[in-house]
Image 1 (cartoon, rainbow, N blue to C red):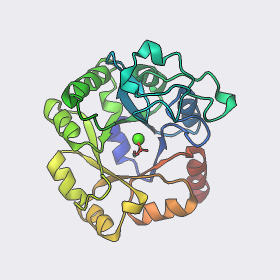
Image 2: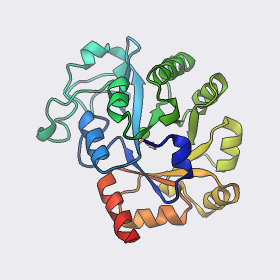
Image 3: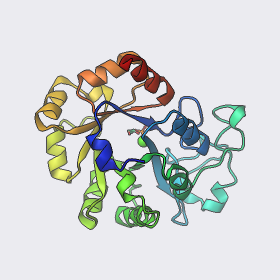
Length: 256
Ligand code: G3P
Ligand code: CA
């Protein structure tokens, strides 16, 4: 498995599986990770949140309702309570009984196979974001996964804090909606080494700045060949996709 440093030096577009292979398996589950690994992607993006008892789980929404058979806020439940939920049936009965994974489960699965992009969700208003970052950083250090982890967030204060506490951590700033700052300005202000934006945020102005400053840039969500072309024209270094199998195939066919 390549370190992030080595990946950044690799020529060609990097395919990142968004919440695992979330187009064909329930997002952020072990099944979605296994499917993404089977395509041979070098990086998988996941979302993390903390439970009531400060356990780090892999989960996108702040509430349970969309992707489990539970209801209510994730942070109001302990991990033991959440581990009883079904996180697969909402997607398809084929995935009934799928569990919400721990961050540690995912890192164990990815070890030796792929890098991870851990997206740290913005904290709730009354949440201590620094404490949250400390937990996540500690888990990554303990798993000896720092060289293989890219941390990203829309919450730039979290990234600034992470960068101030640790050297050698890799961070990427996500472009918040309606933020008109250029990537170079955001990287300067946050101390991050990479930039991530949505495909519809990749304007000519943004692309020109990426080119001018040679910025490592991820673009999401890129699910079709046309979107792939748009991302490449916009100077993307990496594409974040729900269909890694499809994107890997397009790129393979194009190379032959
Ligand atoms: O990596 C970018 C993307 O994951 C950010 O948005 O909502 O899919 O977590 P979201
Ligand atoms: Ca995400």
